[in-house]
Image 1 (cartoon, helix red, strand yellow):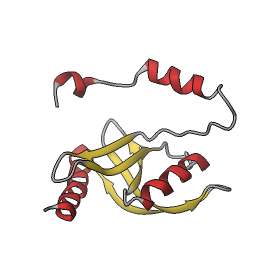
Image 2 (cartoon, one colour):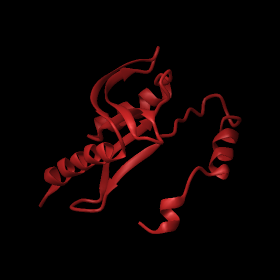
Image 3 (cartoon, one colour):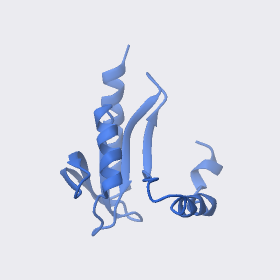
Image 4 (cartoon, one colour):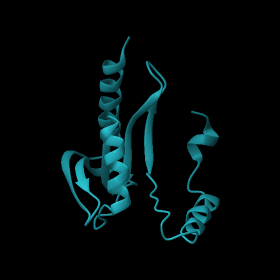
Length: 135
């Protein structure tokens, strides 16, 4: 990864797009995933989808719809909560849900003490992906 890419943070233009999209129509539902792990080899694809949530944030109906669609396609979805500076996270895997209320189920996967521990967890996901799709 080059230095420019590594140093990128939030985009005011992207935030403006999302804000204005909300004004188009009350039937144009949307959600944004925070992060998607991708892999180049052995098969270029999505390894997992990550959504970062503050401690009291729930999962919205539009997120339930998106998460269900991803999991039906074999893409695991994880909800991450915690301290983004220190890397102390609780990681949960989305199991399923219904958008009506919304209701959903998540299972605790791991707690990380720091970014190194988070990297080990992410590495294990990527290793599993590579093993599954090795030619």
